[in-house]
Image 1: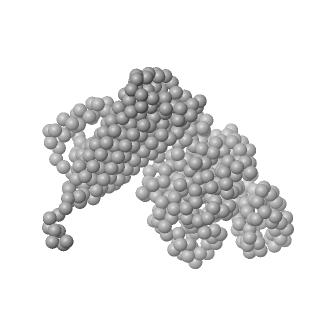
Image 2: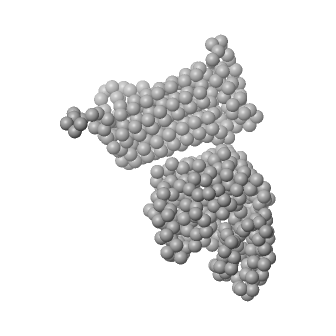
Length: 231
Length: 302
């Protein structure tokens, strides 16, 4: 990857350019602002970005949009398909509409903002990413979540936080059913302060005091010393 | 992986363009199912009792039609297209279908109904669409499928859609794990299955429930309880269509609606080429929830 500053601010039209051409342009740029038009639900738009560029996608995207994002700021003005911002490392990915399954899956860092609803498995196996959802999340969200924060302004579907490790889950609405080893926990001042900050960064208007916190009961992944005699 | 598309037209002015609107949708789903494809079209215009049939190349359709006409005492006309034939029958469809299969077991009756016509084939989905003239077909609604086979062989008969009864058919993305048991159960109750395909078992299940008096929504509610496995199903009916995803929702689906049409697809990109899509209401159907449309508008039931 070249270290020279490369600015290619402009409009990339996916009805004229191939996806690979558009992604290569975005990946090569080290700064600047781009707009992608006519995304047409294509897969893997604006994935693998490593530099602090700004990308606005005008329309709906397909699978794995902004996957593996690092440093870049990607906004989708529409809906996103399966695997939005999968394995995000840093930067921000925002969707003004809804996101399909597995949004923010395995994300290590950065911020994912979904202004509408996210469907099933939002934040599955998240490893440090912060995810803020303006609407609801579907079933099995934060499954096996290891680190990071999932903030849901609406309701959560069944089996929230199943087999969770050390991620924190904040839900303002109802939780249909907690997953195995996921329990409600007290809201302490540091949690209220964290929520106030992340809600502000996400551009969401909500009172931190309206949220409940959920996390791991830590009975699944710690070795029980009582079982030592079994070996 | 398979691809599904469905298009239900509300605006009569679009009826002549049904096939032309569906072809790009099907093309967009080629990557999801490049081994075979099929489509069901619900014709507009007056009812025309029809058996959509498939047989090996060289089959004597005129002889079959003559036999059927004699056996049922009603005229039968034939339109052949590639290895398919549309038999326009003057008699009761159920009798005509049973008579044809009894006399010519090598014929696969893909559909029977007054509006439905089904066509399917192996190979590139767009080649299948061209062979059977999808783009030029008019109608009120249609569903189509691109297949990536998992549970059974890649054959024309094993391609979707599968008929589920008069003017009803089904396409499936997913795989069923209890189809062997369910097949025996259904055969014991008089359903005749013509392939080894797991999706045909789902079709036969709905057919059985509706023969027992269920409405489509009731039959789908029963399917939610009895079908074990992964599925996104789209079901075509004489007057509309329905969509159902299993409660785990591993298989994708997107719905979109405007004043002119309702569209369903495995992925949004198949809906993207439709006229007026920029103003469509677009959403992902909830798991384990029945969505259905008819001429009287949307009827969503849980």
